[in-house]
Length: 287
Image (cartoon, rainbow, N blue to C red):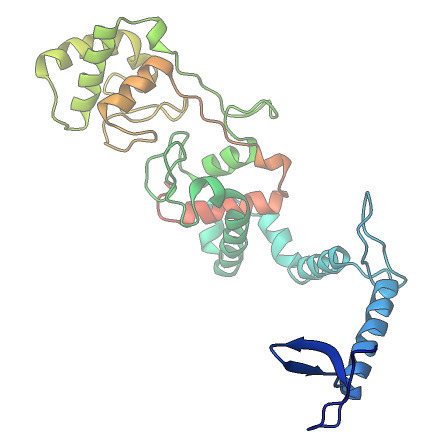
């Protein structure tokens, strides 16, 4: 270019760019850098040819080597199952109630079950299994459908109130907002609060006890201790799935609750169902 010149101090040609009288020198890039750059281009082209690279409509270009991370994981899973085949066979054949008597098998079941729980169950029940509003705490000894290991295995296998498994545990609380008057619901709430020792209006609680006996005792029991056969919660232990304050109790009575749990027997292997059941039972709240 016509405006290029040689810098007198360095003897290097300038690029023609100048800022405030400062000329930019046209220093060539080091050859080692250029060759490294060219090699990365060559390596990139080779990688695109050899390995999966370009995303397409239904997948990526496979590459001439046919390498696949999914295939590698599948091979690792097969190898893992092969190493533990004896334990898996024993777990499938074992009486779940007798697992603690076999230390090695029990340790394997709980370890495997913990991995299953963290991957599949913790999203609802929490990483520590302490639950959340609407999702049961699995650490205490308050079980809607029974807390023996066989009860837990059945619940895990078939789920609760889902429409995909004909053997799912099923019960439905009526929406008493369509049955009882507001003052009757308020009285029932006072009675329920009184069951767990909360401060309450004694006169209203007496009225509520009669309403409870006529409408609620059939499922929750005359003493409101619940019925695992129906999934009816114990109302006298101050353990609440949705909350025990008056506003929440009123909402529960008016609109009812209808929690749903998937049927994990349709998604997990029999060994995984048994393992996660052993893990949950061993958390400390199992009956």
